[in-house]
Image 1 (cartoon, one colour):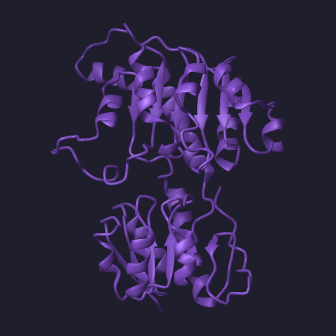
Image 2 (image 1 turned 120 degrees about the vertical axis):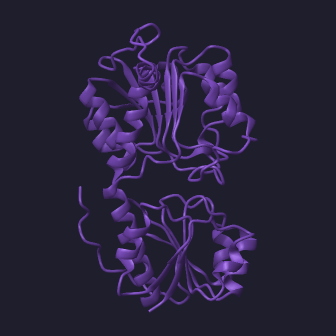
Length: 347
């Protein structure tokens, strides 16, 4: 039995994590984020269960290792917040959740796209004040228009499948073509052409040095004035300052953002009584055609259960000296022993 401390645990997430580890390990759930200031609280815990907004840089990892931590179990697909090189030097095992329900994120991306296109938030705000006018609420059909999908992995494919159901033309951009997407009629094109021809651009890419600010001033200049932009992947894919300037120029019909480059310390917390010091985010939220949500696209019952179960398997693998598709830094001396296959996911 291992002692585990989990950081950044959401209220609705806690019972699912506790159930996944029940009878196996001692789990302590904290709502605070892991960073240089909070890292000393992990002293004595062999396993740290981190969230996507925790900061696990070299200094934090050294503090954790000095306190007895031997494993980082990240509860997300992304891991750009972890210094993997330093983890290897310290002999720390690192694992992530390589996948969970792709439908959770894909469906939420469409929720943002539809809400932005049909001015749903504005309409509901009006009707709550008994203003039933339709002025300014004119939207467009998605049928017959073009959806540009950057990143055609599991989530991008699920998004494309929904777009095909709407009767949209599909353009894709990725390192390699996905046969599932080409079977839907998707045409893979270069990035500039995708930005220029798409009525709706949706981002489903990991954040890497190559994809950082993939939507920059040049990309935004290529987009149609009446295009929609949706990001449910990673905030760093969009140059937010450039997006502000584009919107100030009266371009883009709508934007849906579930992620933001500087969201750490903001998203998942109540900041309603504080002064907003992030000028870029404040400016983005001032535009009537911009919808901002707080990194909730993944947050469905199905996905959260799968994430908790995968995290528990990752811990079991670490303790048994096994590796799996989720392993980023293997246990010292693991020898590449594979873990048993997980149970089939609930679709």
